[in-house]
Length: 127
Image (cartoon, rainbow, N blue to C red; front, top):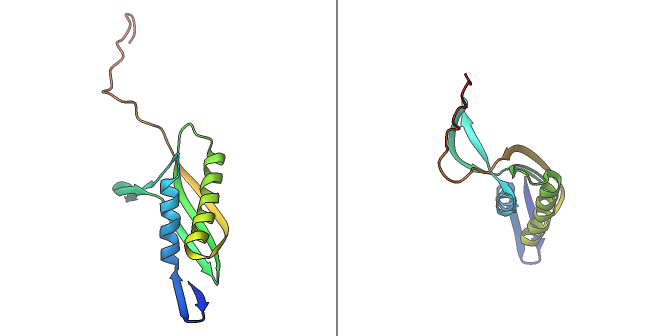
């Protein structure tokens, strides 16, 4: 669906896709979050990015966001910040009201340790 903002000099239509891109940018820019990878038949393809699904009904929006959270950050706190920022930025940029932001955390990203991996030497008598 498309949001229609009527004015005295014409009508402005804001597509779901535009609202989705705003929500994606907000979620991607948030601290301690990341995108989720795509795969085809279990094979990773493309990069990692936040996924969104948006429904616009008049001037109200329902948003669904799928993202990764960095370990060991508190998931509830990170998702609360993302939810609040999506609501604020979508409203600021479009004038639409975001009634609900459902967030699916599908990946917990563990930071990689810098440097090469080293084998741990075996102790005498080990297997």
